[in-house]
Length: 351
Image (tube, rainbow, N blue to C red; front, side):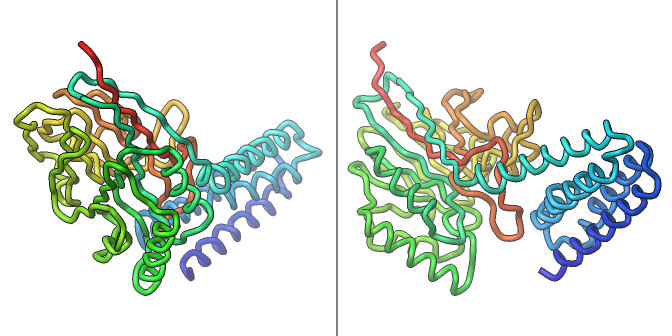
C-alpha cells in the first residue's frame, strides 16, 4: 500500500509538472514531450516499487488509466484556444482511456458469458451435458459468485467439472471464505446426477478440499481415473497438470476419454484422450485487438489460451477463460475477455 501511494504521488507530481510546462509553451512538441516524460516516469518507476510481477501491472494500470487520463484531460483544457485540434485529440484520447477503464474494471469482470459447445463422437453411448467451472479465484463470496454457482445448476448438467483456483487469499480470511463457500454450496444443493469432480489449482492453499466438505464432490489431490456415464474420466493433480511431457495412455477399450487438469500445459504431452479440459490462463484476461492476449502464463501457444482447438496428436483441447480474475497484487480487470462458464453437450454420432 505504501509503495503504491509513493508511485501515485510521484507520477501525479510528474503530471502536474508536465501541465505547468505545457501551459507556458503550448505547442505540439511540448504536448508530445509531456506525454513522453510522464510515460517514462510511470514506466520506469514501476519496477522499482513493484513487489511482484502482478503488482507491477497494477502500478502501470494506475499510470495508464488514472494519470495518463488526467494528463490528457488537463492538456485538452490548456490547449483549448491554441492549438484547438490538439485539444480535441487530447480530449478524445482521454475519453477513450476512460471508456476502456470503465469496461475493464467495472463491466467485464462480472459480465458472465455462457459458452455452449456440442461435440458429437461415435464413441459416446448417451447424450451427456457437462459444465466446466474454472478459476473462480475470488477473495469474497458476493452476489456475482453466488449467481455463477446458481447458473451452473440452472444448466441442468449431468456432470460438473471444477478446474481449480477457487479462493485467492490466505490465513484466517481463507478459512472464513472457505466456510462461507461451503455453506452456500450446501444451501443450493450443489450436485449433478453423474457426479461433480474438483481438481486443485496453483493459487489454492492446502486446505482447499474442505470447500467441498460434506458435499457429493469428488476432490482430486493426486491424479485419479473414474468411470462416469459410460465414459472414462481422468482428473489430474496440480503437478501433473503442469507437466508438459505427461504421458497418459488411452483406455484399453478405446472408450470416450476426458482428461481434466487445472493447467493446459499437460496437453503438450502424449495424452490419449478425446477431450482435454483446463483453465488457468483466464484467456489472457486482457486481449488486445488484432494481437490477442499479450501473455497466458502457460507453455501452450497463445492461440490455445481459450476456446476449443484440435490437437496435433488427435483429440480436442478446451481451455476455459474462467469465471474470476487474478487477485492479490494484480489489477482487477478483464478487457475483451469476458468471464465464461462452459457448457459442453457430448452427443453420440452414428458413423
